Image 1 (spheres, rainbow, N blue to C red):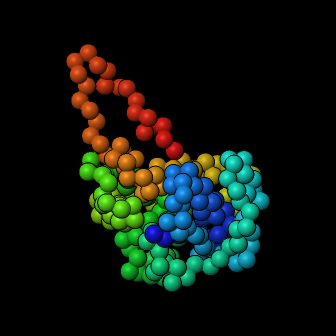
Image 2: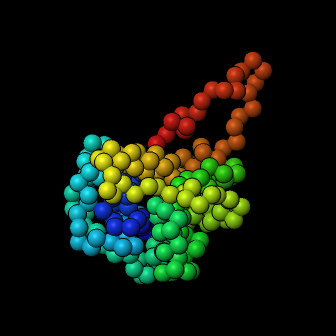
Image 3: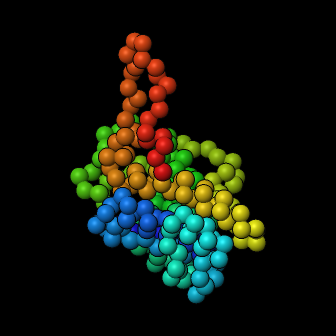
Length: 219
């Protein structure tokens, strides 16, 4: 399976998302992280540039390696070869789809994808017997759920920290980290998806219904 993150310059948001994903896969798929190819690119990339220093520090302060990133321009071939494309803004999603219109069912903004995940009805998980088929089936479910989703312009955007103080890069990294955690685990850990979608148990008489699930605290 191939997952591609997209922002504008490929030196902040998409680069951060790529590195966080690589680290997450090492934790959640020990020994099998290479089953998922992860990359990033920009719609107007600062080609050949390293990650923005403030974004790099935001990553390293979370214990996520940042060295070695080289910004690259998004191409039609990259989109075609990806199973999922995650953009940081609605405008970038539109740019990706203009480049590759057939990608409609696999291109989402990060906020959109996690919002859709939260709306999925309880299903029997895993969605398939092998991990890659499960992930692709989940992408199809998200695409189907999008047909009924109504949003305000810009609601699904992760803001661009370029030109902002270092704290803006920290806050963007926090947003990406929070959104990515649950989405990626649902993709790569079918048993986690099963927990996400399991119907809430009916409390017995005298049992509080407000007890919190450990899933709510995950990623």
